[in-house]
Amino acid sequence: MSLVYITHHDENIFDCEQEYINQEVSKPSRVYNTATAMKGARFAKSLRDRLDVEDKKHSVIMQNDGMRLLTDAKKAHHRTMGCAHTPIDPPCAYLRKNQGIKWRRENTHVCPKGEKMPPLPGIGSKRQEPIMVPNFIRRNIQCAKQTVPCPPPPRYIDTPVGTRHNLLNSGLLPQFICRKDFGKVPIYLKKTKKMLTEMNAICDKERARLMELCRGVKGHTRTTTTTSPGAAHAPPEVPGMRVMDQKERNEIIEGLRQSLGEKTKQYQSMSLLIDSVAKVQRKGKLETELRQVEQDILLLETSPIIYVSLY
Image (cartoon, rainbow, N blue to C red):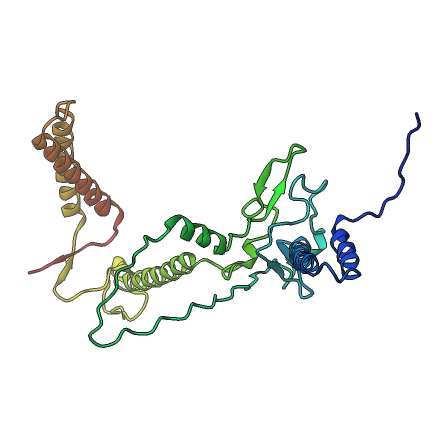
């Protein structure tokens, strides 16, 4: 027994129809079989051409201008097992101008030609009811055949067993550089900076006004007829106002401290369990009063000059 080792073969099963046609053309007596074979060969050729076109199309096509075209094809390179190594752009081509990925979908939609509308019925004619019930199963099959399938999303393979993941939002494609607001200051930060600038301007203006009133830095002329040494540093006079003396200031601070001690004692003597609306309201009222008294004491102790109305 011997073994035959075939090193090269060029057989093609699609050429069988052409050979059959050549044989049948030489026999003019068998006209019917020749026509049938011609029809079958034409159908096989059209099917073969369509399959060739589908095999040559890919899901993503790189154009000369750098734009990637997303097509509606069903076959693409490395879809089953994936590439051995995922192709990554070199560092020199990262974040360059007009080097981002630009997607554009291929527009291959063609509106189907509608069937010819039946003529309008004549005047006085009655509408004829359909005799046969429509075949919904056949109609659904035709609709399913005419439906254009959605293109598969771009994916990548990360394991040898063929685990697929979506390429978008995976970090392998620079997507954020394609956004319009990439590399720009957010709007909320601009608003915050503008608000802070306006508030600082208002604070500076108010501080200058207080300095003018309290120390006489601007717009105040001191009298030279006074003989007391402390008159040179006296606060400016304001119409309808008087300056609070130190004795009155100490009395007010002492009264505020007594009030603070009483309210603190009332607050600490409350029950630990706050289980009613009245207790919650009383606690909130005491906290507000304590906070106000502390602010008043701090204002009197830190303000060097305090004006009191005469009216």
